[in-house]
Length: 273
Image 1 (tube, rainbow, N blue to C red):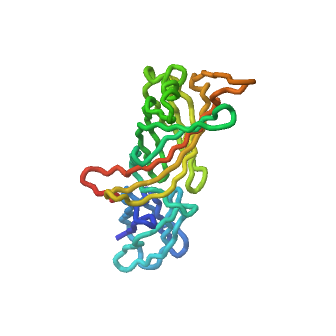
Image 2 (cartoon, rainbow, N blue to C red):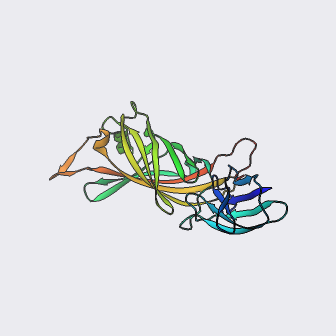
Image 3 (cartoon, rainbow, N blue to C red):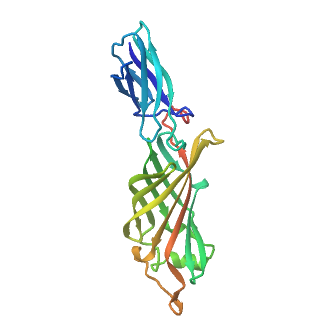
């Protein structure tokens, strides 16, 4: 006897910690139960025969309501309740998502001579994104010496003590400290960036682009994140003036992250289960 239900997204993923409330025909609450890690709801309480209203809510999802009829068995079986994301955007399923460096990029754009741009990227990096109802944690590490702007002389200078000083500070790291939603598929990620021996608070503008299966039997999610950094915030004060106050290299650096992440699968599980 009691309440039974499963709470899922439209593509079949469990909605963890969804709240399921059962009310009788007078509107009085009879049962309230939370979905478990598999999205399943079970509450063993006696129910009188008759119609009941099932209301399902979860953070970040539009609420759903349906009717369940209890027979002499005393069971209100709501079946599978499908919740859609508020704003119509479905997020990746909960879990740990590992960044795939082969299908991701960490790019930079710096102003040059006051009117043009120099683009570069880092070739060696890794990280992970932890997701429950929303993205909760972002961690990344970049090999500072892997900077590549397409010019060997410039890259050697960037690796020198004037800039990254990779001999002393071989890694650039980022660890998030908080995440807040700024739109249906966008978040502001607050975190700490350690570079050139300096740690600064840096916010990322994170967008979610979609989820789908890959050819290797896994599940992938795509994200894009951007931010702007000031060189002098990280003790990179090199400043060659070429004319009338115009610096060879701008003081700000735009960072553009295009990320594919793969859902981590526990031993014995299959991808997406």
